[in-house]
Every structure is written in C-alpha cells, then in structure tokens.
Image (cartoon, rainbow, N blue to C red; front, side):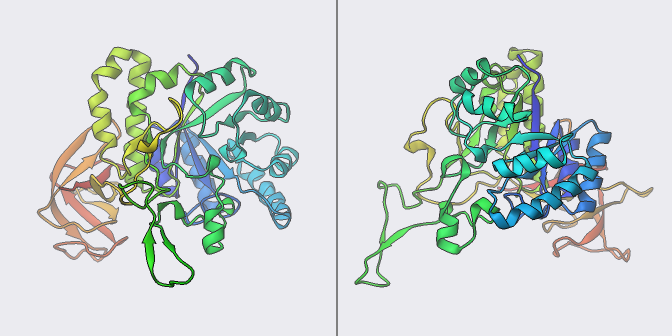
Length: 408
C-alpha cells in the first residue's frame, strides 16, 4: 500500500483555506488564465501567493492547473505565465498539452509537472512516455477500471505517481474533451468555458415543422440523455487504497466552501480510518454515506472503476441536484462578547436553528442569538448575500468552522 494523498479543489482563496483546514493533503487551483474552469472565481497572483503560503504553513501542497488544449496564439502567453509561476512557486503544474508541458520543463523545471486527465492517459505505455519527458505524476483517464489502474502500477516506474478522480461530476465526453459546448454556444470546453450542454434537455425539430418539438427518449424514463450521475467511491476506499493510486482527487473547482469542506472531511476520515483498520472503516461506513449525502449531488455512481457503466449511470428525467444543507458562511475569529464576523452566503434569522460544522467531524446544532451589521446595528435577519455581519450563537464556533442549515 502506497502513501495516499487527498487532493481537493478550490475555486478561491477562501475555499483553499477551508480545504486545508478540513483535511486536504494537497489543493489544486486555477489562475486567471490557461485553466479549464474559466467561470470559476479563480486566483489572482496575490491570492495565489497568499494561498500557497497558508497551505505550506499547514503542511499542504498546492497545484496550479494550466490544462487547456493550446492553440498557436496561446503559447507566448503561457510562456509569460510560467515565468510568473516560477516566482510564486506552487508545488506542481497540471498540464494536458505537450507544447505547454515542454514550456514548463524549459521555464520552471524545478516545479513538478503533472499530466492532466485531459491527455487521455489510458495505458502504461502512455505513462512511461510522460515519465521519460519528465512528468512526476500522471492523472488517469476517467474511463479506467481499478484492474487497469493496478496493471498500470505494475508496469511503470515506482516513483511515477498515479492520480485518479474518486468523487464528483462526470463528463459525457471522453476524458472531458468535449466539443458540444463549442458547437452549440461558441464557448470552448477545452479552453475552460464549458456551458455543460450534457445537462440540457433535448428534443428533435423536423425541418419542415419549425417550432414543433419532439422529445428525444433514450427510453421511457426521460430526455436528459447525456446527464451522468456523480462519481462517489466513499463505499470503496479499501479497494482504492490497494490499487496503487497515489493521489485521490476530488472534482469540483466550481463548488462552494460547504461542498469542499464536507467532501474533504468525509474522505479524510474514511481514508485515515481504513489505514488504521478496515474494521474501523466498515463500522463508520454509514456515517461517511450520511455526510456525503449532505452535499449537493446528482445521485451517485462508481463510474468505470468496476467495468463499463450501464444505463443506470445516467439520469434521464431531470438535471437537478439533491440538496441536504444550505451554506450560510464561514466563521471568523470571535470578539470578547462572543460575536464573530461572517460574510453571509444565504439568508438566516435570529432565533433560527442552524449547525456548526467542524473539521473533526462534529456537527453542533445551535441557535442564532444575535445579528449585527458593520455599523453595530441589530438585525432580525440577513437577506443580502455576501453582507459582512457579526453573529452570536448559543455556542461559539472556531475560526474556519462552516455554518449551514439543514433542509427538509
């Protein structure tokens, strides 16, 4: 069994800090250019510097995505970007394009190079190819089974690392290389601008009958024919640990701090428990499942890990999320009167019962005793998103604790 890293996404500096506090061994982020999540908030140079310093203070690594499939016009900008990253010093770059890979090797060879899943890494020969070019790690294609990953591990150098997605949204296209978004909207998924057309509802329009929509049924269940369930391997951590994977990767660079905290905390405990003893892991399995189900998700599947997915891996009748909790905000440091600062994310009111979600796995039910605005004025509720407030609860949270409300 190899040392295992839990790799967690972060869309912003705030979410990076949450990922670190809630159990990540490493965090992957995007800068403002050349990553595949253009709609995420992403990191300015200043935020990246602060985030890397915060992570390193806590013994956590930071990887920066530069995984677009580059066109000619991108290359000079990539060169300048890597010169900037050379000074910022992330722990690794995640790259899909061979030209971008070679630029990183030339400009900042001291920074590890990890090969993105976008590069379609499906066999040990491909892993060896990237290793000989200087890759430290290769991210497996989503289409691999655990048996195939084990075979790759047996046929590559011991110091070449395997990273694998174990949780999060699945893409309808092979290893995420999708053309639908570009075709329908002109926004290129391979340049970070995916509009997620796989989640849309489809119909046929006959050329001579404009405006007459005929539903597209793959079968009687519905018309969302491309909409995949989300990947979840929380019930199969022992199989993952014995497969030769070095880094367990969570998908979700567009997700909230609540999502990141919940998934990071749950997999952290599951991995640690299983490393201690499989019996302890099995005894706590219901808790892991309950916690993961508290996230927003689209129903779960094990993807390709146990063979090719069947029709049961798709969701035909809707494209909505299941929502267990509403994210309210992150607790700041408390003052002498027990009030702490929060940037509110959803409305809550004085007298309401909410939960403090702590990194150690505890969930503490509390009552909202008071809300003040920045001027110190009392408020009955906080209806304005991202308003800075001072909150008093029946139990005082620690800094970086998550506040959430359970939904019926």
